[in-house]
Structure formats: structure tokens, C-alpha cells
Length: 331
Image (cartoon, rainbow, N blue to C red):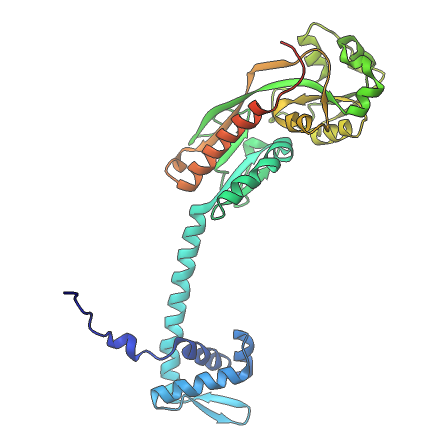
């Protein structure tokens, strides 16, 4: 036989919370019109709710004189108790919301290039699958001094070539650099000779310079890449060369048919797959010593939202880099 619960006399005797809310607003502003504006309702609704509350309590809560109202002694007593109760409820609700938000809000720090060419392509999939997790992206070349926006608060997760950048973090290697020349289909059609290594000497080279990039990575430019293959080139004497330290700019120039730039596979692979760029030449170089790490705060290990994001990043990086085939042969 089921146990019956005795009626809760306190809850049964409670007046309508909607009516109490209207009363508190009217008492606070000493004006029904301003109370209605504060609660985004009509003045008539405020008046009706207060009449119902006064009827339930059996006393007048306001002295009405024209357009002004004034609390009675009973009204003052009820306002003090009701307002304090609403403040406590509101503060408790805010604490709960803040705690929940802190558990579900994560930050990723990476280079501007990784943010623009990889993360922007795939992060939407994770956000769609996990609508309760909020992800902030911090895009910077100054990775060692990165902050999430609040003073003294470091990002939850880094993607960079820096292994264990600070105390309390752990790093996982996720992929190596694979670098090969890329250009637009239109540029290749006009300059078919660049499919041979020697042809690159006469190409319009879009070159990545190291200025302002000391914390991003070990530097690879056309000089380093060609020397690795045993071909020397004096960039200072190169007739057709454009230098910039902004990799996004170089890629956009390549897409628009302005020349040939070095393509990092994890950044340009999708553009090659989509046909916006073409991998050219006879070689690609795998820099096994140039590893990219996923670095995270060790204290986040047991955070469910974080473990979802970390697993997604590792799996998606692995899948996307293995799925994109580059139609060139090389070392």
C-alpha cells in the first residue's frame, strides 16, 4: 500500500509567487507603472496581481492616493520578508548557473594559421554535437604568454610545437609537419615548368619570414626547404619573391594565382582536396622532429567536458590528416 504524504501547509498557504513578484516591484518603485515597465508587463496586470495578493492576505498592502502608492505597515513587513527571499533565490540561482558554466566552458590556444585553416573548418562539428559545451579560441603567435582573457587564467588546452610549456600541463604528440609546394590550378597551367624542381627557381615564390614568429615554430622557409633537398637558392637574389610573416596572407595569394608557397599539410590539405590549391613539384618533406603537441592542464583530467574536447581533437586531427591524399611523390 502506497504511503500518502501529508499536505505541506507552508506551501499550501503560500500566496502566488507571480503576485508576490508584482508586489515587490511595485513596493520597490512606489509606482505601478514603473513596476510594470521593470517586469515587462502591463500596469493592469500589476494592479490585478496586487489586488489578488491583498485579498489572499486579508489586508491592504498599499495606500493609494491618485497615481502614487505608499506601503502600509503590513505592506512594509511583507516587502522586507519577500524582497529578502527573492534576493536569496536569485543569488542561489546565479551561483548554480556560474558553477555550471565554469564546468562547461573551455579555452583552446593555437596559432592564427591553425585557427584559420584547421580549427575553423572542423570545430563547428564538435559544437553541434555538444551544445552544452562553450569553447573559446585564443589565436596568438605569443603562445607562452597566452591568457584566456581573465588576468592570471591560462588556457585549458594548447595546440602548438611547444612541449610542456609550463608547470601543471601535460603534452601529447599528435602529428608531424609535412611540407610541400602549392599553387592555384590557374598558376600551374600558366607555369607548368614548376612541376620540376628546377622550375621553382623561376617561379614567383611566396616566402614565410620568421619576424614575430619566434614562439610559433622552428622556422621553415623556401631556403630551408630547398636546402633539405640539396638545392641551394639565394633568396636575396631571387627575382620573383614576396616575403611576409602572415601565413594566411601567403595562402590567399597562392589561391588567387600570385605564386607558389610552401604548404603545411595540416593547414592546406583540405584546400588541395577542394581543388583551390594544387600540390606541385616532385617532393614533399616530412619533418619528424617538428612535432605538434596537444597540451592541457593536468587538473582538467576528470572534467567530462574537457575529456570530450580532447578526444574529439585527437580523433579529428588523425582522421582529417589521413583522409586527405596529396597527389605528389617524395621523401
